[in-house]
Image: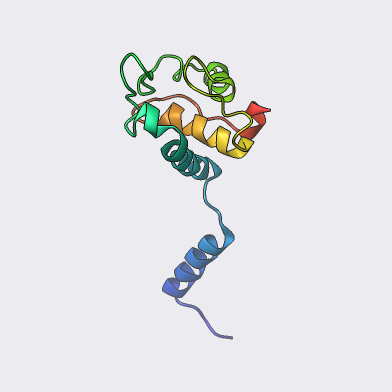
Length: 120
């Protein structure tokens, strides 16, 4: 019987983790949310979440975005508000949950993320 070194075992474990796709689902949601935000939101709300004063609201340090309950942020993303269009019929629920999660956690915001089930 052949014995494996500790280094061989560590490499095998690391490769297995990469191959198994065992990334944290929350981290994956945040990464997807950043992509969605960059593509669909940043032209109005800016890449830094600061928006355009008097035209598009800031999302950084926004009290609605940071509420413990995500319902208001979800409603705005789904249905729109004022000059912002709703994305409820435009994006799949996974992308919607991802972008709401990203917005609630980017730029110093400290609110819980959301799951696709919360948007249904």
